[in-house]
Length: 224
Picture (tube, rainbow, N blue to C red):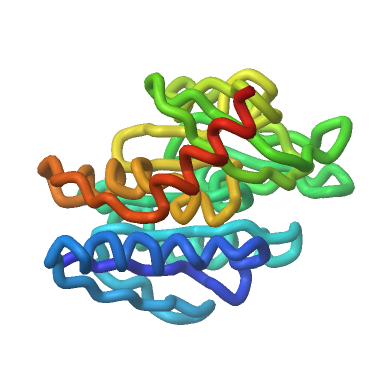
């Protein structure tokens, strides 16, 4: 049984990142893996899940989500016990040590990885490509923050900006993060399966689908 929990979708769902849960669920089901998906609203208790998903959001909702997660403390405990997290954009910033809001206020993060986010000199908007161990991760970024000091970045930026113009995201133990929207799992079938395999603790057989051709087309267009 794979247990998926989507954290505060009413706050962290601005860019369609909730679709990551659907993709992860369907890739598991098509392999015969039973799945449950729980939407965790603000004020709800965080369940005992195998993977938690956090999406993007604006400053106000991001701050509200951070305050609730810090006060609750459950997510940090779940990760310490081996649960996975996939965090996108604002969700990524929340999991770091701190982030800066528009206006200069600095907010303490959950500290699940080393990395502090400051306001950038301009908003980063557009297609992005990240080299993750020799494979391309494609998506779309839209953020005003820059994240520095990440010692275990997900990959190196080949197009776009990512964390700081050089690297994107984080992969620190069971904590995975990226600035790429899309939703990122819908655009990158190989990445879904890598996360799924890591959650389950074993390799997976290939699962050919039309998503592979769409992925190849995007890679060709964005890396030419």
